Length: 360
Length: 278
Ligand SMILES: Nc1ncnc2c1ncn2[C@@H]1O[C@H](COP(=O)(O)OP(=O)(O)O)[C@@H](O)[C@H]1O
Ligand SMILES: [Mg+2]
Image (cartoon, rainbow over all chains, first blue to last red; front, top):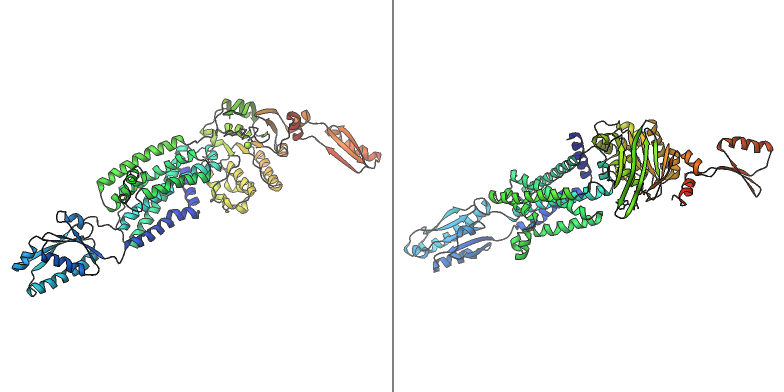
């Protein structure tokens, strides 16, 4: 390996890149804009607090409690059927369970506790909800028994899917950015360099093809990690996102870079004109971006589109990143990573094999 | 000694026969030109020699061997219509390519040879056509090659820029390099080449020094004297011209103008093919 040549090629690629305003826009400004816009739209500051209530008593007293809670303006009560597992709901929003025998306790003046399920990570919401609950209970106690505490509550903590939209969205944006930069980067090299005689020129120099591919991939990885880091920082600073940057994330981004570079090579093999190559890339890029769960969960789409989404490599990149960075769902992220790595290997291999390095 | 030896080279693209069984050699330290109109098969020929394309038939020896990594260290190539990286400066471009070779030439020296000292920190995309071609030539020199291939280096340039590049190419020969030039400009081949191969429809139809070719196929040199409205044409040998003109002077003939008409490679091409070069 001629390290001097590889180093030089990486350096030249990076210079050529940061002097290209369009490239800078798509790798940095565009994802950041998306995060700021969508993050703001969906972070929803003044929405009512949602509280699930599960009424196991189904009595006049319990109905009164639900009604009192509902009267608080900024609380939106959603009732859960008594057969459901309240902890599942509590992963999303705070939940209150009214125990069986609630009314009887009141009648006999026996102390009775409601159970309040909270997610410990949502501190602000929790304290607001607690103060509403305390005031409702206090009022009821006053009426029932002149302030002897008949109704009380106990807290239970549930750690669950305490994630907001931004936590969902940012891994998607990372996946999208990696895909876009790898596909277009690959087309730039395979179509534009070819048109300019640069590939011919390189064939006549002592640099080996393997060294050249290697340096281009290192370059692509540098760009992709750089934009990932910037995106994560923006998410952390602007939206208080709690993401972790771990080994699995690195593997996923590296595999995604190879996979989409390989796809770019395959596209370039069939379209030789710059403009058609760009359109072909967009034709792959944009539908994949929308369908693979970048902006919204695929569960929101019709069933047949969900099936389709699951054959898109970007879906596994997005899901893998979410599981690894945000949900800490290690098993799921390993599965996603394995899928995307195998896909990357195959596509990159096909891309390298079918690329015409020599002229006909 | 021969730097390149081509034997019975053939190249077909589907049904198109681009190169139709040609043989020639390029000698050490000469400027050798392939001259022919567009579509003659020049680029195909050099690109096979450079190892960019595979031949359909025939053999190419370069420094006595087939193309390999060692030979790539010793050649410098300017592909036809080459365009370098848009957003690297002239100097950065040369540094980039020089890193691909084990030994490399002196970048400052190369910049001054091609006359780009003032533009060395300019981005490639901001250069004129002539300056870009000079960068292309400079790029072909960074590996300090023994053999330089230039495919249509002056196509699309204005006359001044073309002259400038011709001087650069002459300088390469003075520096002891072998130059393989491809062109469809007759004046260029005639001015620069030690030997020219005239190519037409995939075949080499004649090969030799410009002087030999013109002597062999061109019309004789003529002196044309116009007196009033009469034209007198005298066929002559090159070395008899001064004597002839002196004689006309001594005779005291009153003439309006004297013109010397020499045959050129264009005439050779016309004679050999019945077609014009351009
Ligand atoms: N890649 C190619 N595919 C098919 N035909 C080609 C290709 N390259 C060149 N040709 C044809 O081969 C012939 C010779 O072309 P070329 O070597 O470029 O000639 P020149 O350099 O003398 O202009 C032309 O007829 C050209 O159209
Ligand atoms: Mg040509």
